[in-house]
Length: 72
Length: 72
DNA sequence: ACAAAAAGTCAATTATATATTACATTAAGT
DNA sequence: ACTTAATGTAATATATAATTGACTTTTTGT
Image (cartoon, rainbow over all chains, first blue to last red; front, side):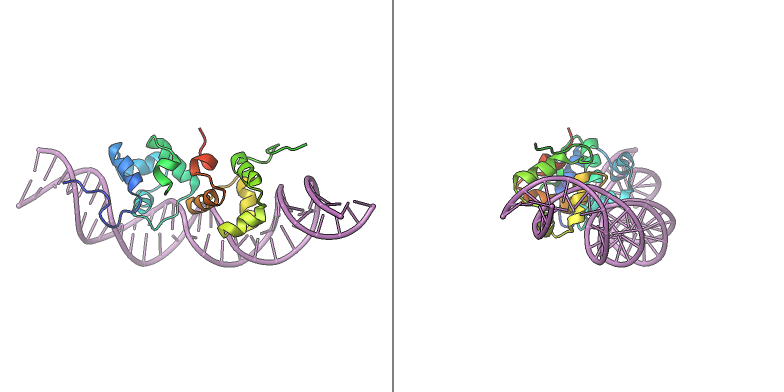
């Protein structure tokens, strides 16, 4: 069974893209130059990352801002 | 003569969208709940706004994140 | 069942986005 | 030329994003 975004996960798009790219939170973190906790917090929601960080994450995961961070 | 983005302006897309929407920096600022200076700094570049603020600006100007904040 | 890796989370600190106040400059209207 | 609105900046203060370190829980593989 695979469940993504059961309860606490709020940025499902980003988590999905990361899992699809087969990269761990820790690896993504090091690739974009932040801490694992920061990635974790972004995926868990309750967070307001900077544009620079959002952009870096998008580029690593081959997505755009709209793909991962635009709602509606 | 009309010039947008002569030298200091780095986020030309955002400034253009704002001018096209015929809204001043001050009005945009109040609409998204920040200070005029913050809007000014974002347009001038050298700035790393939060995702929340970027999103708010986009919605006020009827644009998406990619429209205003995505490069290439 | 066990071990290892990945993920979730907390408290305390540091870095930085944003606010505040204030002043100078440029554009627009009369 | 004058007046006013809009814009460009700067210094200091405050709120919060992000770090650090540590610990617990969940997944994954053997």
